[in-house]
Image (cartoon, rainbow, N blue to C red; front, side):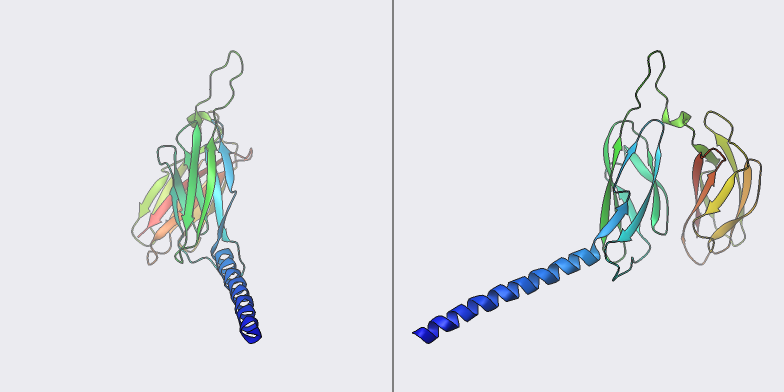
Length: 220
């Protein structure tokens, strides 16, 4: 009888230990696969219509498997304007409410961020400022498709309310896909360098007062 009790107690102890080990393994796997989006929350107003998000894995033991897939919870409030590598640019199209930005890599790791759309406070005697009239720089065209190696496109920058403060500073997300080969004044020329890889490249521009703009170039 005493032997049976000892066996029963040992069985319970082993079950508890096994449960702890399983729980520990599950926790580690979840941590490895968890994706962090930075910032994890953002506020857009009439004066700030775009936010850049960056994705990374919580654990340093594994790496993101590109390309990343970005999406939004409510496309009527905003959309992913451009994405490249581990970053994406969210642009708002609605003034109030909350939206979510989701990202997933090819290994099914997922992350999420929240975007709060708030209306700018109006001062007495002034009208609300429309998002299209903020200090963001506008690149024309802002969405381009290039199909041949060494194809070029001329990009022109304007300001929503005032002229950009020159000189402009241009950059690209992935120079292996294409690059700015010349620039001056309000224009720049982008050239396609790789048509073997199908993807989007992000072109960014900023002026001397910190105003920024973004365009997307797709090669196929």
